[in-house]
Length: 396
Picture (cartoon, helix red, strand yellow):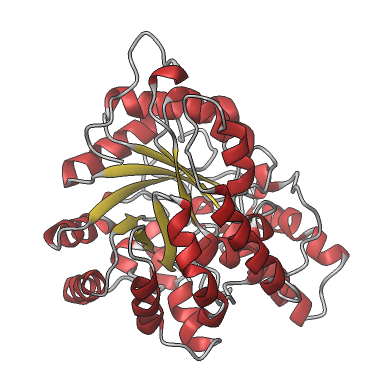
């Protein structure tokens, strides 16, 4: 993916005119954050890293988000060593992380010097792509992170956190994308962390970004609502450059669509990614063994209420895990989303002005309850950062 990727023509995109679509594999980060409450260990990764490297992915998302604090708090592992060990074995594919902007990999804002040192050290250890996001799409929490990523010669990917509300229009997203383009981002990701983007919206938003912003566009979806595969197909018609997928044993439900499914879908078309299916099969076989006894049992494959409660996929497995610990599983777990939606109250803005997304996009509004909350106040109190759900975070 390069800056020279041609934007879609104003007369309407023709999928045959676009280059092969590329994949980012999320197995080593968001997939297990979404399904296993981020509990994959480095020992589960090491045997298969060389094979992942040979598949032909554009990047491997393998760090950041909740992986950092879960390594320290629950797995007794050093997240920095994880990065180094993966880099030793993955020599050809770009390594990618999810960076929470000014929050770095924590649950509060950190000083600029902490952020810069974090970027410097992680770049030194081999990270290539930094997907920088703020759950409220607040440019002020992105600008320093983008600046430091560029300073160290790495790929800065901007992010549009997707939500559904009266203020979340195409023009709203274009305005946020323009802000990030001015910072110097190399590409931009539509981050559908709850899996609620419709196929038509995926087409319209990708098309608008390609025409107006002119940067490579990546689409990140969760399969929570069942629309992700269709959204990827429509986005491909509009010229999306990269989509996020996971190996089949850690795919679908609240994770991403399976790489195997999407590769087969595009096979034989002008957008065929040309991935090494033999290597993908080795990866799939390995993780089929690893998944035994690991998955948090989800109440159903498709969550019909996700359009209402908009809980990110990366928070769902943690919520269910904690409900289970409190002996509140079963029907209580199945109705967790409905309870969250009720607790949130009416669709009120949780931001300082009508031009900002509400707290739902952080997956944390269910912690706030009814009534309006100022974004800065909510962030200061940790209400929009997923801090009540260890190992979750608004990352998905």
